[in-house]
Image 1 (cartoon, one colour):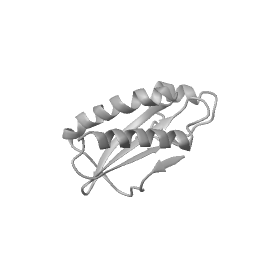
Image 2 (cartoon, one colour; image 1 turned 120 degrees about the horizontal axis):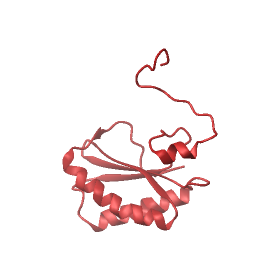
Image 3 (cartoon, helix red, strand yellow; image 1 turned 90 degrees about the horizontal axis):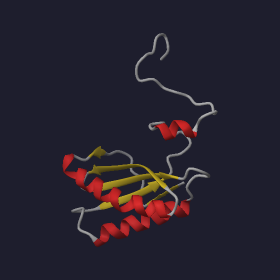
Length: 130
């Protein structure tokens, strides 16, 4: 499910000056997501032109996240951003599930797929395998 205001086609990562913003947003949305039994998987902040794009990937351990839950997180974060003066200029918030083809990054991700067939893509050859 995806709940967003607009779709982002290309973007560039923000510089180190936005590291504090990332921490502030994490500190806002993680406690809110926990009350909904939702895990924040990833938070990406990017700039495209003068607009800052905040992308939140969230999921539930069992059953997946619903569009209503994505919408609730989106509205909560948007409201908090409007109340504070954290971003100078335009911004967009995008909250979505990581999808079925989500990357496996943490031990928890690998445990979630135990017993299921998965496909790995190597960044470097491993013996004769690519």
